[in-house]
Image: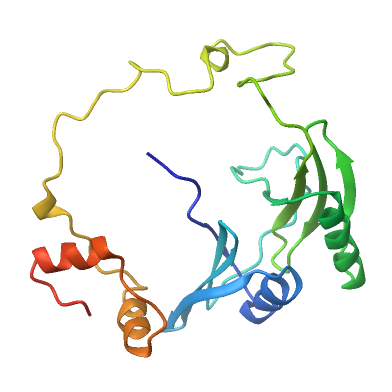
Length: 211
C-alpha cells in the first residue's frame, strides 16, 4: 500500500541557511514551498528523497544529539540517512563537506553499509550511506536475543489487525484545504505545475473548480 516516504518534515530557525545547505551544498533541488502569515514550508528533493522545513516566528533549532548515541530524553527521532551510489560518491561528499567546514565523522563500515555522519544548520543529524552488501534472504539478522515477532518473516503477517468493514465511497473522497492549498492555484496559473489526471477526474466528479 505505502510506496515509500513522501517527505520528512523538520523545523528551521533560519530558512536562508537551510536553503544554502540543502540546495547549494548537498545539491537537493528546491522543489516547492508556501509562505504566508509569517509561516513558510519549503520542500527539497534528491531523486525519490524529499525533506521539508517549517519556518515561523519563534522557531528554534533542535538540540544536537550525535547519531546513535543513547539518550534518556523523550526523543523518537535519531537521524536521517540518504543513499549514495558508491564509494566514489561517498568520498566526494565527504570532501565537499570538509571543504565547506562541516564536521564529518567516518566513513564507518557497518558491515552492509559504509556511512559518513554530519549535521545541517538546524542540528539535524544526517547520514550518507553506500549499500555495499545486498541482502539476499530477508529478514537477515545478527541478533543475540532474537525477537519472535521479527522472526515471523519480512512480509506483513495476516490476522493481527482487523480488516475494514466499511469503505469510504468515492463520492466522499474529499480533503479539506490546508495551509499549502494556495500552491496549486498559483502553480497552475504560473505554468509551474499540473494536476494529476486522477485529481482532475475527482474534482470534475465533485463539480469543483480546478482552482
